[in-house]
Amino acid sequence: MKYPYENLDTFTLPNLLDRSIELYQDKKVLSKVDQEPMTYNELAYNVHNIIQILKNNGVRKGDKVALLSENMPNWAIAYFSVTYFGGVIVPILPDFHPADVQHIIRHSEAKAVFVSKKYFQTIEELEDSNMKFVIQLDDLTIIDELTNHTYISKLKQRIASKELPKPDEDDMAALLYTSGTTGHSKGVMLSHKNLVTNAMSAYKNVHIVPEDTFLSILPLAHTLECTVGMIVPILHGANVVYIDKVPTPNVLVKAFASVKPTMMLSVPLIIEKIYKNKILPKFTGSFIMRTLYSIPFTRRQLNKIAGKKLIETFGGRIKFFGIGGAALPKYVERFLKEAEFPYIVGYGLTETSPLIAGGRLGMPIKIGSTGLPMAGVDVKIKDANPINGEGEIVVKSPSVMLGYYKDDKQTEEVLQDGWFYTGDLGYLDDDGYLFISGRSKNVIIGSGGENIYPEQLEGIINQNKAVLDSLVMEKDAKLIARIHLDYELIDKMFKANNTPEAEVKQRIEEYLEEMRIEVNGQVASFAKIQKFIEQIEPFVKTPTKKIKRYLYKE
Image 1 (cartoon, rainbow, N blue to C red):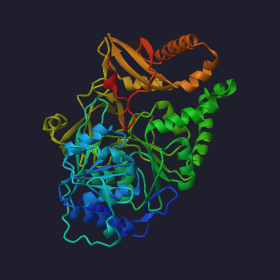
Image 2: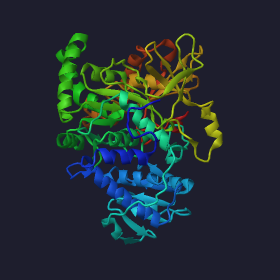
Image 3: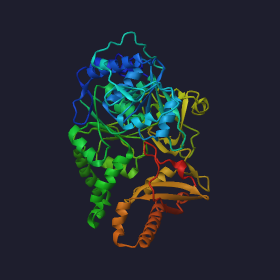
Image 4: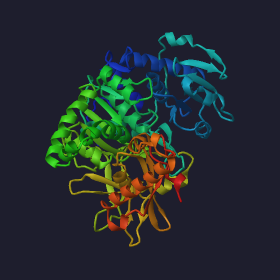
């Protein structure tokens, strides 16, 4: 595969960074909202200074260095510093439980840790590890024995990177620990070639120029944001801006107005909430509007008007809105398409660095599809059903991982004859578009041998305005669904403040039963759900907002 990038024949992160610094020296690259941005030259300066600190403290090629922090410009500095001379970065999702963080640091044998003040206590409590020193990420101070903060004065000096070892493209660059919905956390080993070729494969999907500004809201320790939200913009000389707070709706609106991003990434939950809470109520708030919105022609016109207002809300310049990490509900995607909002749905896994397939701006959109395979990525369907073409999605590309860290058995299970077995079920249509049906581990077999995909049923249930989350599972050979409701809305609907608790509970049960009947009217006979159960507590989720299904097995 020949990628259209000059001076980048060897696929390593230092080569990518050096190329961008040479091409985009004085362009803006990293900042927080409303702060003065760092230039590409300043990024190089900071990276080489941190490299010297790591070297002076005994970090060598092949050593692991953990990175635990919320998003900030220094996160990227740490990432490129460690990988520049062949070290291995171990990004840790901040949402992980402290015990999981400590396990990752021990299991990875990390020699050092970059940590922000916010998560410093997690590191302080760490025992029995190979860790030699800690660097506080906020201001790049080194912490001696976790107690004595010693400022490194050399940070103010330009330090040349003499005789630095350079990694080979097949060397491990990053070790990422997944926290999947099945409960087993695995260490995914990604090489320089994996990450760089995956970043370059996006050139067919969206055109990026140095004048573009990315707004980064997803955790950088998640492979999607790291590759597409950090490495990709740096490859193209673009600018990345980080939010300094939790991305609540109010924080986002202010950031949109200030940054006026042209590009950003999101999980489906964010855009789904915007649609359900801000847009849909305006079209369903009265009988007349509900009637008009139920007519396809009128709905399309109303959605188009709403789309223009949505673009204004995003700052007026948005031209690429990438959605990944989970399935996008079809009813939300229909709105985005009819609203002419510049969205792309992508599909990938940590093990594939992560992109496997994605939509392409300017090409036809097929609702429910994750688009075409990325440049340089081969996708095929293993053991396809002769009737509907459905089977396991398997992938071959330069972006497929080296394997699972210290786990040859699991590696051998998913890597066979150069192909990676994703564990996802889906099909390719006649135009080569990929459609995902669900996880093979989640599929439920109906009484007649039919495949029932709980994710698809949940997508229908979640359309209800009062549903925040749902989980479909099998119990005693029957389908049931756990429903977590929007209790703020329920209180308003049933006037809970002035109604006896027993009566409210009864009305909730009746409401769930009405919802069940409505949902069953939209699904095949073998996929009808027997019972809806109220899930009072929010579901426990992974950092990418997927429900940890294994915790709710009946």
